[in-house]
Amino acid sequence: MLSSLHFDHVVSTELFLAFFFIISRLFYLLVVKPRQNNLSHIPRPNQGFFLFRLLHEPTVRELEQWLDELPHKGLIRYYGLWNQERIFAASPEAVKDLLVSGAYQFVKPELQRLLAGNVAAEGLLLQEGTIHKAARKAFQPAFHADHIRRAYPIMWETAFDLVNAVTMQTQAQHADTSDKTGSKEGIGLLKPLSAASIDIIGRWGFSKDFNAVQDPSAKFGRTYIQILKTTKRGQGTLHQAAIIGPKLALQLPLRAIKTIRRGVALVVKTAETIVQEHEQSQDTNSIDMLGVAMKSGHFSHSDLVVQTVHMLAAGTETVSGSVSWAIHLLSRHPEMQTRLREEIRQQLPSPRSINGHLDLQEADFAGTKYLDAVIKEVLRFHSINTILWRECVSPARILDTVIPVGAKVVFSPWALGRDPNHWGPDARTFNPDRWLDENREQGVCDNVLSFLTFGAGPRRCIGEQFARAQMRCLIAGLVGRFEFSPLAPERESDDGLEIGDQAALTLFKIFEDWKIQATEIEGW
Ligand code: HEM
Image (cartoon, rainbow, N blue to C red; front, side):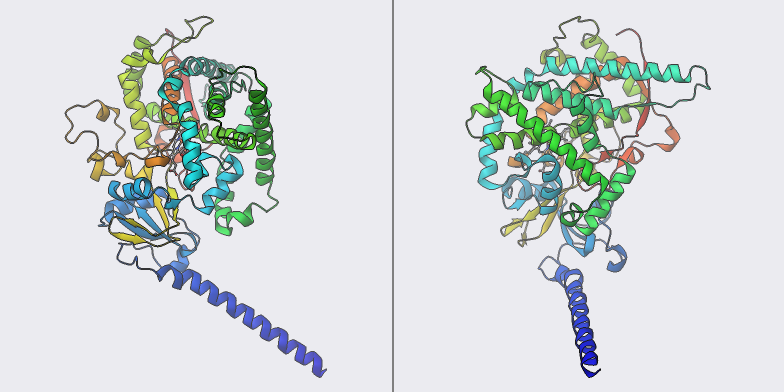
């Protein structure tokens, strides 16, 4: 009896100590640690009592609001999930210190490496230091202007496939509604757009025809679209995963995680086959992206497999998402859409008219000034990357502030690209003409580092010109042939929060059920 009492006493003391330890640890992590650095001079917005926002990670909307309302000298400090401190590089000068001079002192944080590494593999985007520098140098020739120029016929051919796929959807929709009320259901554009970006990188990058647009049931394209697809429920799960920590979340027996793992296994297997085929090929003049990277002699077999998986991820959703934004915005501005269609029809041959050899070249776009202005404006107004992250790994300076090791620093292509301080009072208006107006004071913006849609410095997007070229072809094909209009204009806005998830950690993810009305316009 006595020993049992003694045992109970010991257990309850241990429980009490464990409880006390957990509470003090939490108190230290949540309350003491966030205040333990010398960054308190950086202005901070009023975010309310910390217990009420413990599970909230501020969205790009909040960053934009703080840019407007909080007097600052280029840095803003705020608290995110679990009261963890973030330093927001809020001016082009601060961004320069972060991304240009401090490119290798600020690395991609663990969260991003874990999430991206599970889908996109540890390729160029996630490599650091000297390993990154050498890999980047080896890849650079593959993205040279001459090499991108050769991609135009491939991209135009894919745009042609895309136009046909959308035509089939609109015809099927008409057949469905012909005997009913004629109600508008719209078509889903995201899937064929994702398929087009998969086909383009397959054909240009790896000499591989995934045939994802023409055959939506083809296994590779179908699986890849499934991995990257975004639903409201899926985004909810992702937010919960961020709360409990991605390491733990990735171990949970969730259906979404199993689907992603299965999908990624197929992608890795496909990449392995692609690399093997290249290694066995007798064609020593191979000029696709992988062939050029192989010629550098820098990469081992397994490096090439990783980089192949990686390029597929980096170069698909970003492009399909940005084209989706373009179509959404043009659908809301019919006068701009008509002007663009007229230019496309005047300057470019219809994909239908060039039977057999769809041989469009970069030079054909010499006269499409308005198309290029629309693309620039879409990329500025709706950067697909909302907030990007860094972690300080060696003491560094941003402006006049010493940033301690371990600090999380963010920059926001979305918010800075729409900041009236750098783009003028109409910064939050979609206006492609700003890129054509030679009379604008100070040019389009006062500092090139206010445009961060492709990042900046030595880690700037290597695929930028390839992405811009794809946008030219895909938008020209679609707008040349179809008139797009919103399904429910009264519920939509240029900001487009209804078509995707702005709270996603890095990318603005377009929902797979986003629909739009498309009508074929004869004559091209
Ligand atoms: C509209 C389309 C695209 C956008 C908006 C975009 C945006 C970006 C941004 C912002 C970064 C820098 C990320 C950071 O600093 O944290 C980046 C890096 C990168 N992008 Fe893109 N990208 C696009 C298309 C592409 C394409 C088509 C490819 C390749 C096929 C590609 C490959 C990469 C790679 C490999 C990196 C890492 C570069 C490095 O760290 O050296 N991207 N991209």
